[in-house]
Image (tube, rainbow, N blue to C red; front, side, top):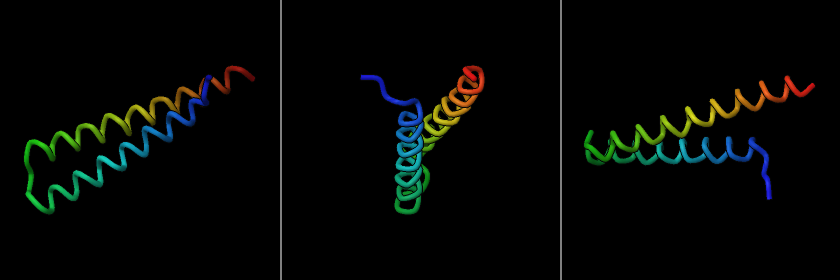
Length: 65
């Protein structure tokens, strides 16, 4: 079953927001630690991957017209 690339973009953005929330929560409770940096890096990768896939989707959609 194939799903839309926009579904994957939504999942990436949701994971990025979730990791950002956990990072903010961890920093306010414990300060900056290795785990906080790890969460920020994961959030950055997820949001970046979502944006890259979103731009690719729009570029591909324009080429198909």
